[in-house]
Length: 114
Ligand code: 5GP
Ligand code: ZN
Image (tube, rainbow, N blue to C red; front, side, top):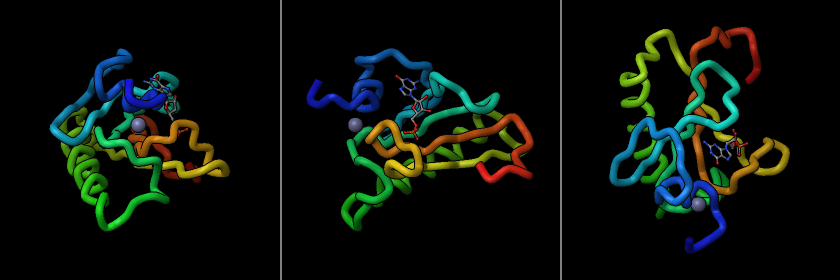
C-alpha cells in the first residue's frame, strides 16, 4: 500500500468491499455503516483529500464521479430519488480523507436537513 488511505486500499482491492460499480476512474461500494436503506460511497480511484482540494487540474474526477452516480442510480433503480452528500473537514464530520460522495436512498428524506 502506497499510503494509509483506506479508500485507496478499497479501490485497489486490498481491502474487501461490496462493489456496486467500477470503471477506469471511479469505484463505488456499499457503506459499512449504512445511514439509509441504500447507502453507497462513490470515490475517484485517484487520491484527493476532499472537496476543499478540488482544482482546475483534478475537477474532472468530480465529473467522472457524477457520471458514475447517474449510472448507479439507474442500475440500483433509485427512480424514487436519492441524495448525494460530500462531507468536507472536521465540522462536517469527514472521517476518511479521500474524496467521496455518499448516495443515500430508500427512504423519504424530504423533511430532513441531512
Ligand atoms: P465520512 O464520514 O468521511 O463522510 O464518510 C466515511 C464513510 O465511510 C462512513 O459512512 C463509514 O461508514 C464509511 N467507511 C469507513 N471505513 C469503511 C470501510 O472500510 N468499508 C466501507 N465499506 N465503508 C467504510
Ligand atoms: Zn486515498
